[in-house]
Image 1: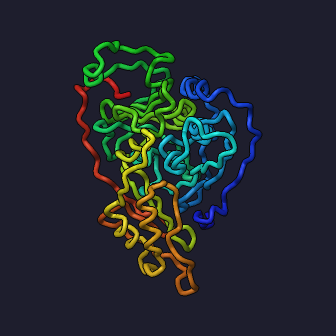
Image 2: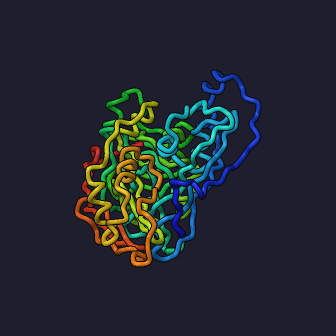
Length: 372
């Protein structure tokens, strides 16, 4: 994939659409959540062909809003989550962005720096990647993750079972929170697991659909991973029992694209909560960011724009940005970066460096039920 300078937004595609006559602002705001949850959501599927060693897919685009749009509509139509959409569009009202508003569509993805096998989940990134066995493509979907205090464990597990139209058995912890819940929730529109479920070998943890699509791309679950209904249907069909599932939690990603190093920094879980409440996130540079970039740069450390690295760390938009200055002939070959000690590994353009986090041992919730 050719390197693109996203600071210039030279690759953005403007899609002008005729604004429709808007309904009343109050009525639109009141109905937006209902319509979104009922919508079948014909999302733009994120499936990309990849070559061996390729470590980025997609591109940043620009969408011009219509009067009836909400940012949640735009996010779902582009198969993006709420937090990643809002992190890239600070200051825009997600419910009433108004007509003819230019919105950034952050659909440029650096692939996780772990073996490209099976399912990979980056919790802080709020995104799932599926690498089919043939190694020729990747599918990526936004995901709702655990709320504060209800996190998903990191490590390596596998798909232990699959079920269409699952029945939900609320675990004791959720029944304690809401004693009025039934002990068994049958398949149907009120089932929080949606229409498809992939049960992990970790007890009580599941990748599933949802009856609340607006929770995708948020800290919204009790530890399970929620996908849009159309996304879980695709993932359910593509994956087999025994497929590996690797869960990581890395707020900094990077990759060499051509002769340039790109870095993306994502909001922390706490910052994602602030964004969801409509607040500016509290500035916080990742403590390992400088070490991460230093090890990634290797012999090309002199090309790093450190002021811009700091800006990326503060803003945490999640959009991969070029942090190197233009290369000279003597610096035309990017380094191959060893796995760093203080953060996830980076690679040159040839081959990813495997990073194997230790397998977690989650505490079963009395051995029963599934977290929604």
